[in-house]
Amino acid sequence: MLDHDLHCHSNVSDGTLTPTELVERAAGRGVKMLALTDHDDVNGLDEARAAAARHGMDFVNGVEISVSWRSHTLHVVGLAIDPLYPPLVQGLQGLRSGRGERAQKMADELAKAGIGGTLQGAYRYAANPNIIGRTHFARYLVEAGHCKDVKSVFNRYLAKGKPGYVPHEWASLPDAISWIRGSGGIAVLAHPGRYMVGRHSMGKKTMRELLVEFVECGGQALEVVTGSHTQEQYAEFARYAEEFGLLCSCGSDFHSPNESYRDMGRLPDLPLSCRPVWENWATAAPSPILKVA
Ligand code: AMP
Ligand code: MN
Ligand code: MN
Ligand code: MN
Image (cartoon, rainbow, N blue to C red; front, top):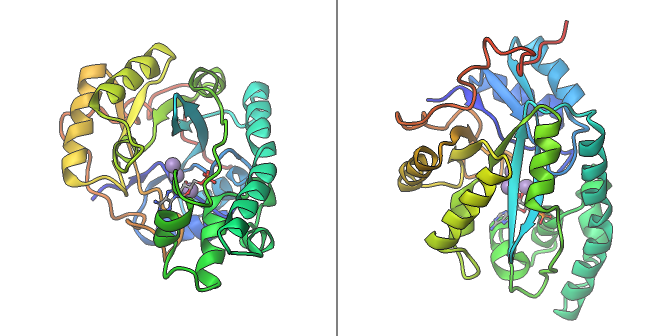
């Protein structure tokens, strides 16, 4: 079992636990190195880092940046970022500022589909209203009895092509990677397997084109082990990582005790061919692993 978890969410984005509660849960489940990677926001890092220090856990500053690439929405995780790097701060601010308007449009679309009251309902689930997103809508739709769980809400209403889906322009791939790299961080293509399932997914040819572009832009790692990948996908993306010279990362993508495919501290080890993204972190200067004095 792997004791590194480099992808998870607090209620600063669409998780349900506070950064402190999240770290406590991770510690209780044997995680020794944690990165908090909230969507488009770094505001939970100070609290999480302090909590990690209390538990003697290694902590890595992280973020998960929303990206539009061709017709696809991708997520790029930044690890060991400097959350104060001005272009990163401004870039994330820009991403957050579009979310309110998008939420309004989503509520309008859902109203046309006969479901009212979703904007207020969703905001009730957003501890940080700046990051209002689909998961908050999904939680409200479950509460209101429209679906049995969050996953079903996505399948029925919020995934691409469904009545409540609103297209949105996120960061460009080169911008997201340059904010991360410019801040001293490592750019990781998150949960690549997720881009290859479903009606609007990319095929193998497009995945290769994406990986070529990702590397050209300065991307350094691929998330091989993640809560949404199958065993076969661990092996498949380990092969892609080898072929494209990418480091490998892993993380649960934990959001909530009730919703996750995989809980923290319950992921298998990276495949043997993988070079872990944390390979040289113990000796790197400045250290990507943060302690609070
Ligand atoms: P947003 O950034 O507002 O578009 O929301 C994206 C988030 O929605 C992801 O980070 C996941 O937490 C969640 N999500 C996306 N697709 C699904 C799905 N099929 N089932 C459950 N949650 C999903
Ligand atoms: Mn999420
Ligand atoms: Mn993601
Ligand atoms: Mn995530």
